Length: 93
Image 1: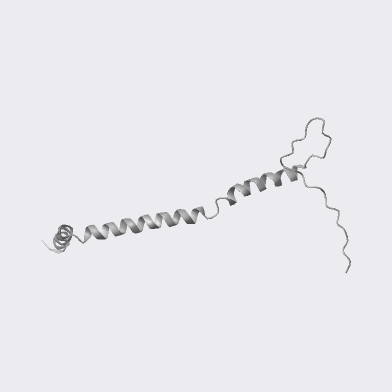
Image 2 (image 1 turned 60 degrees about the horizontal axis):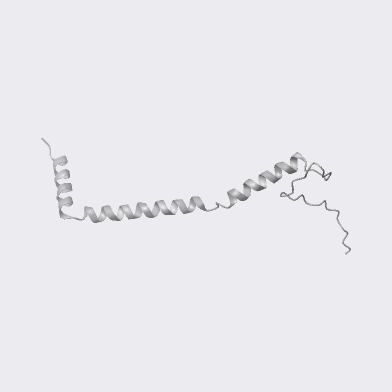
């Protein structure tokens, strides 16, 4: 099997800003759009998993709040208030 050389055009350096004297090739509109898309994708990809982390933090806060409610509701005063509330709601007349 024989491999042939492929003529690959040189990559345009995104940091290169051609001067007025520079007669080098300018990127086409499609290349410029692709470069902008890659730049945006790099920014967005850096936040990959951020939503999952936010859900984890919110879930932990909800669990902590539920634990606090359980501790409060186990107290005798609150239990008495809730019992009276249910008893009054169930009485007829």
